[in-house]
Length: 231
Ligand SMILES: C[S@@+](CC[C@H](N)C(=O)[O-])C[C@H]1O[C@@H](n2cnc3c(N)ncnc32)[C@H](O)[C@@H]1O
Image (cartoon, rainbow, N blue to C red; front, top):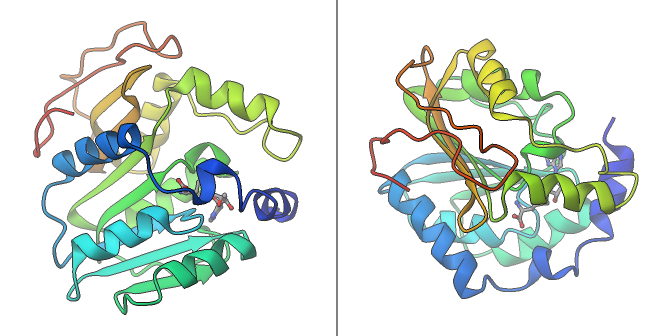
């Protein structure tokens, strides 16, 4: 199912987005993400599509020695690079393989962080159901990208056959996917300056979210204060 995509990502190992250090703009976006997520100390985090482990290393530092980061990737070269990067962190479990095939611990995960991977998941409904099942009652699921939806989809369309059809769903579709998986969306924004960000959790969808028609045009979609504050 993922053979072609795994080969594609194997070749991306030296791409600037894959292995270079985060620049100041990216760090600022990650800081916003972490301000919403709050303290991660001691938490169990799942990071599908970890790539070379750039974020995995930061997560390992943030959860600390009593926490746990479970990260996986379909690309062998990416996982090898990630292993090297996080070798010093016993709290990280790295796996070469798909998120869908990984035996996630049910009801034990505090945070699922899908950073720059969600469009690549081939069975999004199934993946979300699996991830939802892994969450603790108060657990959260964050989907984040440094770039907005319209740029994500454009970049993938131009990147070659392996990923050309990998799209970030529209806000309407995303809400349906979340609802079907038993998840609600607390906060969602999509704009050129801040990129794409969605924070969800277990439970029924709330109706207080305000939707604008901006999705795909680089504007906020809808926003609601999350527990940790506004992004
Ligand atoms: C655009 S890259 C992002 C990597 C990393 N999260 C980052 O931001 O640098 C997407 C990654 O997801 C991985 N991937 C795609 N589908 C996956 C799946 N079903 N399970 C696990 N990893 C997957 C790819 O191999 C690739 O390394």
